[in-house]
Amino acid sequence: MNESPAPPRRSEQLGDEIEERIATGQYRPGMRLDEQEIAHGFGVSRTPVREALIQLAAAGLIEIRPRRGAIVAEISADRLCEMFEVMAELESMCGRLAARRVTQEEQKLLMEAHRACEVARDAQDPDAYYKLNEVFHRRIYASSHNTFLAEQATVLHRRLRPYRRLQLRVRNRMQASYSEHQGVVDAILAGDSDLAAERLRGHVSVQGERFGDLIASLALFKAKGDESRAA
Image (tube, rainbow, N blue to C red):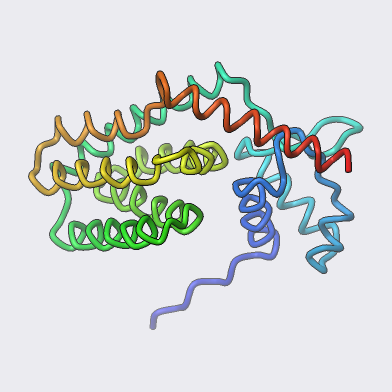
């Protein structure tokens, strides 16, 4: 008899909700996360909040500092560039393997995710596009049929969530992202592993103007956080 999966623990649910607030900018880099305030806001005790913060610290999204508690992690521009370089290579590897190993069912799922992104793009809804974009990339990870690679890509993707999301608010980036997705899909469906790898690497890399745009957006992101803390 099949057993239904166990429901997620409350600490895991809280971790997802706090992570979403970090990704959307409600909890900004450098902001202190007060356990009591979070517990009150979600109507829970401090225990699951503490457990959730420990989980997020393990993922690198927050830092737990002596006498200061939990702080939303800040990343320097150089470090951020390095992380995107690694992300680009991991995704490139996923694309290369996906082009070789993708099944017909996985091709269908990838196209469904791509079309969903198109709907969000046409609606000019960057938040919806971002969530659907995550689904699109996870479909590629799964199609690589390399569990270890998919796990590593997922971990770094999660760590970069706030910054990948920021990119979509740069003018015309959502349209460009969708066009790049189309190129990736075409290469994977054609079974062209080298082209799929090249296009995914270019899609994720943040160099030149794109890196400048990201850093400018990050500066604005932090400035708004400073204003909200000073208010």
